[in-house]
Length: 270
Image (cartoon, rainbow, N blue to C red; front, top):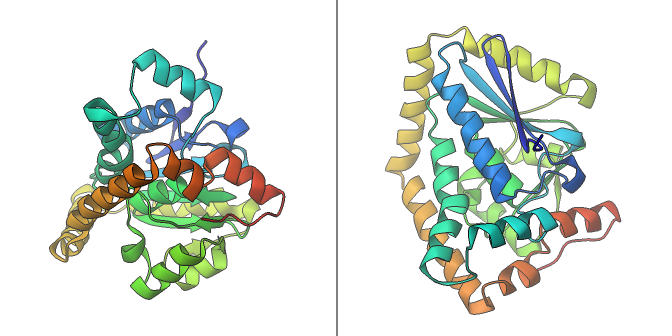
C-alpha cells in the first residue's frame, strides 16, 4: 500500500489533517502538497466538519520544501517537469503560491497546530491558516518566501529583522510579535487545540464563514493578495538571477538539510 504523506481524520466537528513524512521532518514534496490540498478539500466538502486543524507527525510541523529527497527526485522525473521554462513556472507557481492562497481562503476556520520545526515552507502553510497554536518547543524560521506573508504576519520592521538575520524564533517570541495565537505545553497542545476548535465549531456555519470572509476582505482591501502576487514575482526574479537551483542551495539550505543542521545546533545562514 502506498504511503500516505497526509493523513485525514475526523473528531466530531473537527477535521484533522496531519503532514505525515516524519522521516524528513515533514519536508514538503509535491505529493505531500497535493495530498494536503485534497484533505482540505475533503474537510470543506463535509458539512459535518466546521473547523480544520493542520499538524505534523513526529514532533515537527514542517522543515520546509523538499529540495532533494529520493522520492521527490523520482516524482519530478516521472512527471517530466523541467528545471526551467513555462512548465517549470506553472508547476512552481501551483505549489508555492496558488495552493497557499487557496488554503488561506478556505470557507472554514483553520488552525495550524505547531510543534518543533516550522521552517520556510512550513511558515507558509502555517501562515495560510487562520490561527496558530504552538508548543513551547516550536521553532520558526522566516525568509523571502514564495508566499511572502511575513510583512503581514508581523510588523514590517520585525519582518525585516527576521529576514535579514535569518534566525530561528521561539514560540514565545512568535507569540510576542503576533504570529502565534496561543502556546500550550506539548502534552496539552492537541487537547487544548481540539477543545478550542470544538468551541468554535459551535458557532453557526454562516457566522464562521462570513466572519472569516470579512476579515480576509479587510486585508485584501489593504493589498494582501496583490502583495503575495508581487512578492512571488520578486522571488522568481531572485531565483533566476541565482540560477534555477542556486537560490535553493545558496540562500536557504533546504527543508531536510536545514532541519538536520538545526538539530546539531548550527545556525542557518543566507
